[in-house]
Length: 255
Ligand code: ADP
Image 1 (cartoon, rainbow, N blue to C red):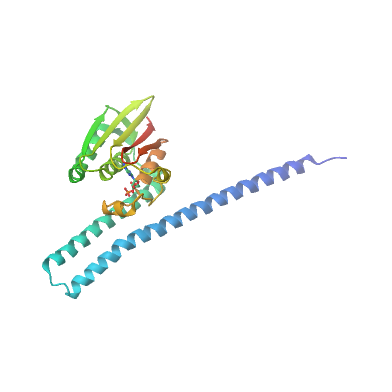
Image 2 (image 1 turned 120 degrees about the vertical axis):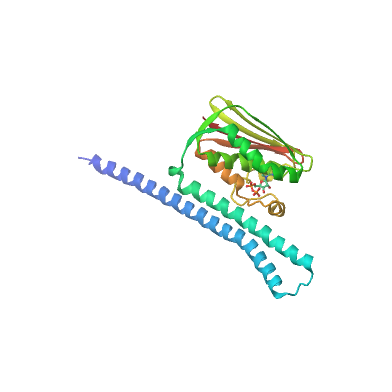
């Protein structure tokens, strides 16, 4: 009897197609959940400084506090919360830009020594505040990339190495080229990261010590942005750390 092999082929193709559709729908659902979680975390993170600002503003408005110094202290706190909100919004905008406008990103030959010099200059006050000494070495190399993203990447790693350090601590940043890859290494002899946190530090809004991060003006988004940027250029980021001894981040990006 004739077996109609075409029917088998159609059945197999249909099963394969429905499997692909299911996988695609699962992927969309996962992305929806990640986005949802991001918005809910972001709103929560913004609510905290807004609530503080409202509280201090109401106290000032009520006129209950007669002490001039205390009034000034409240104003300082309002300013600090505003600075924190600005960092949060800037980081959220950077993530949104990375996710939605990647295709429109303007790339050019970026000289890494210029990027590093700019970052070092802008982080001078932070390093002075934390009494941390920064050593830098950059080989003359150019990478076809978006300058702003490269600046963001180096700046986030370097500012963490300074922030999570101790007075008198040191930071070493090197930018080299090996086997057609640009290698950015940022090492510090600061507080280190506990082993159980190492796998989570690249997650959005994750902080080892929430209080400390907030005190330093951290948003919990810096490393997730660095990872996203490295990934955009088909690069990788790895970390090695020992508590109380220090941390080293290594970013490798194909040139
Ligand atoms: P944050 O804005 O809190 O600094 P990041 O995403 O940049 O957020 O970093 C996530 C967490 O990883 C930080 O809160 C901090 O606990 C930890 N971390 C990052 N870099 C270092 C470092 N060089 N030394 C110690 N801990 C670090």
